[in-house]
Image (cartoon, rainbow, N blue to C red):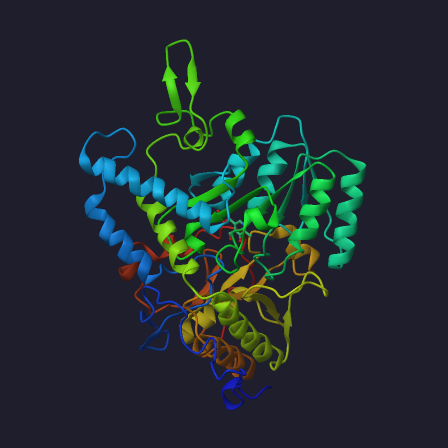
Length: 469
Ligand code: PLP
């Protein structure tokens, strides 16, 4: 069994003496939150599940607190604060569009999240036209196309080169209106070279949608520079967990499509007989919008845009390298990769622990080390099957608030697990592993029934035996 990573710390050195990852790049809310441990006591929570949701940036929380006293209904209110709130909301739209390099004639529609944005776009692709997508996508970039049809779900190739070749062949054989591609996989952080995808798609007369849920929060992106046609992303993965996301891109399909939600705000004029719909973005923002969510998302965009060029990438690279090296030093850990020839992934890394149920390892890391990781199939069932782990895996992901100490906590916990297993017994309750007779006062903290909190396996958790020590 291995010695712990603590006894062999990973030391990264940089030419300029600066050590990205040593401290948070941006302050996040809750960085010092203490959580209870199964054996008693408390520890600082280490959240390594930023790919699922990031904590709020302090700057975002401050902007929301400042804006709350100004909040009033937008667009149709005559009151002064309605005018202020409308200005803030529409300015937020401009900020978000600029953050993703929107062209002057692009539209920014506020949505709830990426899933919402992709379902919206699925309703805007001209009727009868086909969509092309790879089978390595998150369900959010698969199911809306599958449900809409016609769609071709292309098997992901064993290399980037083979995948691009298959994409080119498929585009040459059929007619597609849209190629929907991830900006970064939520399982491995890998991506196809976007410029190559855009070139192939455009040469075949297809547009390109980038699912930016895992890329926009981590890599500079520009619609104008990449020439991609649409980008979708989520506020809750971009340090603004206030319920807003965005779809930004070409206006014509959005103006021609039926309103996403029929109702107030989406119309110009209504009679009993007929409705004149507004142009995008309002056409697709029926109902009262999430003003504070949009303002929060814009604040996050401002904070990320203000970072020196390359700082976020360097921070996350250092942490990912540390994690990668630490995991390589541990026996029985297999990291998942889609392609051997992909460019540098984002700070997301999935892996399996030989002989261990991922759900148990995740529960152990939480209960005994205060570390939050993700386990399961990550809403990417076809990809997990393709990678040979249909039963699921573990995933750790970093972000602007993550530090090297956070990564070390995970590595230390894993090393201890491999050396001596868990130190309290675990059981499966309602489909999720947790310490048997969990002493942690989750029910009281959450103000909810513990069973209700631990239920809800979402994208499919691995099951398994019922008790283990
Ligand atoms: N696309 C990718 C690559 C994702 O990782 C996710 C969420 O994990 C989504 C889309 C869906 O995002 P949301 O749940 O915010 O709609």
